[in-house]
Image (tube, rainbow, N blue to C red):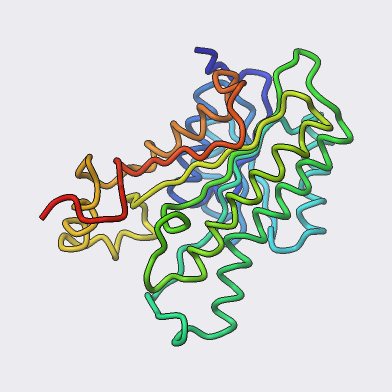
Length: 260
């Protein structure tokens, strides 16, 4: 398989998180020119990015003008942006029923998990329209990080589940738009289930792990690397004929009790 990503410029949004960091490291290992994006956690990027030759960029993805400016900087520096791991987002705490959640918190979650993805995709497509397709015929690739919450729902996180579910519709629409600017460009969605990252470490108590793995054929919580490998595959030429697909990385989760 052609997992070689040399001469590919790829932006990873939300690289300061566990999954984003693993994606950036994996892409760098495959030879890509990687740009790790951060906002709230930007200051933590350079200590591990610089030794790996990974570039860093700060940006508020909730501001469409700031996202446009980010892509303008990337094109000016690197010539083009071949791929995007659209990973930025936030799992809200604490668990609250919809009627107990403030309007401000609901709006913030939708902003962080849906609108940031929308603005990122919008700016990438605008940059692709300006630069045109690669001369070698290897299409651009955009991969959204979704969640099984968007497929099965998640009590206590209605806004998060809603935002992640909406990424499916966004993907299906964009895969028909992007080919007008690059005939081989692709848009896909990776849908992680429970994944062991710092963001959810406090929630992954033994009783919780036992409960969630009873809905999975493979009775373990995913690692960030499990998700990163799937994203890297979809960004690579090995997936050149895969578009508008959802790759669920959740150990066979079915949203029902499999293990009594």
